[in-house]
Length: 245
Image 1 (cartoon, helix red, strand yellow):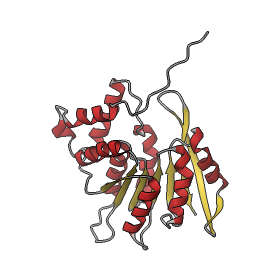
Image 2 (image 1 turned 90 degrees about the horizontal axis):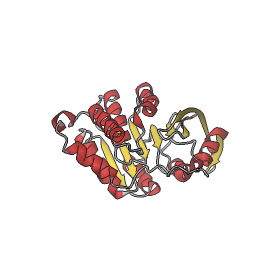
Image 3 (image 1 turned 180 degrees about the horizontal axis):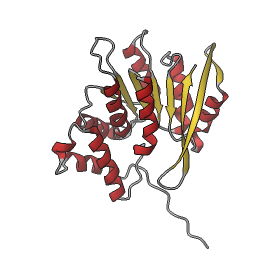
């Protein structure tokens, strides 16, 4: 008789608040403050030292997205699923580097959408600690409601240049269609989805792979590529990068 390994715990056992305390009360907090790279490294080191699998994208999986930000120079990024702020710190830091304009109405914007209020509170504190509070807006609530709020704030002439999807797989496709119906994704927009190898995200992956669809009477086309990777617990997964054409 074989003994099954216990399921991997990814979140919700207090590790998020323990990490927050570790960072904010770190002996080298003065060095970490306003230093996004050092904060992300400390998060990774803490997770490894405590043998915690975290719902963070990590340095390897995030690098292709960092490269995408560098090459496409987006002005507005929205992420679905902020968790503790790791990806917001990583990508907003790069967004700030690639956008130096101070022209009113043309400043870079990063919206981090998180449904869990406790995780959003951790994210906000760490984003502020990283010195990115002036760039990143953390919105708490269901993605469809927060996307509508983003649409109202951006107005009719603005759009999302990069949508990062990393919340619950079964919501990937419904929330993408919400963004489409709100007019947030125009030609040239990038949509990057993590964990598309998981069961819940397969409907989204199939939709993107089919490339051409009709949404609210409009023809919508995407070109996609998939980057496979292996999670820390050995599971096979992938990131899908899609461009609206």
